[in-house]
Image 1 (cartoon, helix red, strand yellow):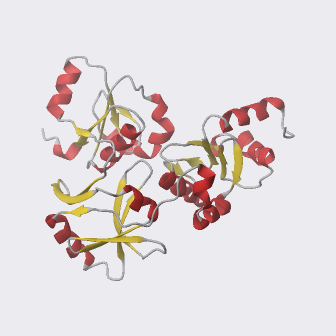
Image 2: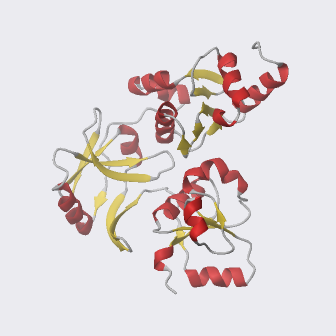
Image 3: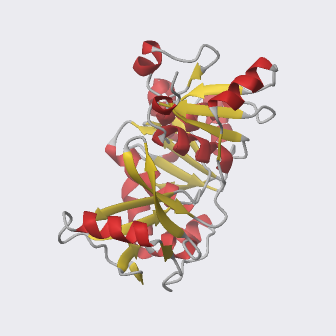
Length: 298
């Protein structure tokens, strides 16, 4: 029992017991408000698909009380299975030593190169881009929700490398353990060529056409239309039936959406809506991507 008032102590214990992995932080998962919180979120996102974050900035009493409860002077603070793990430096150290897997009850990733397919079109485009990325590796990341990322960056210690169709990919061991059977292609979009990475087991998002959405709305089908742009973009113009949940707030506000009704998301270019729909699907929602407003036409 801490030296806190009973009601505050009970509240903190309730938050800690609300999920197996709970992070007290500044901001929330999609919008960290300090660099230390952001670093722990980045680590957890790589390791576990779902966890709870508690924003201490929204409640000054909680911000002070959690420090007393844990006898730890800084934020963020990570709890696993009801037990205090530590702050940012300790989480980073656990990640560096590999002890984080035991802490979270996860198997350690293997170092075996995964089998990945890279289409001829994607290989040609990647070779073109590599000409402007001298000295940087091409990284493929796959997070705990099986959402991929593809970028050029510095080489990282411990990376697993896979060479496919003349393209060498660097993957951290966690991503490598999730990448077997993945494929990389390139597709034309409203803003030019865009890479498309498919990961086995990842939730598949169905692209919904505007005419199909209109027919669903006209028929009175129960659905929720979500505009994931910023409030400023939303104010400039939006579909009248839509509600605004910016993509960076999605995790914190996901509980506002019912899993009993399909969720249809859209944005300006399609990138944010695709990410939002994928996150919703991974969390168990029925989600469709209406895609970019720029492609809707008249």
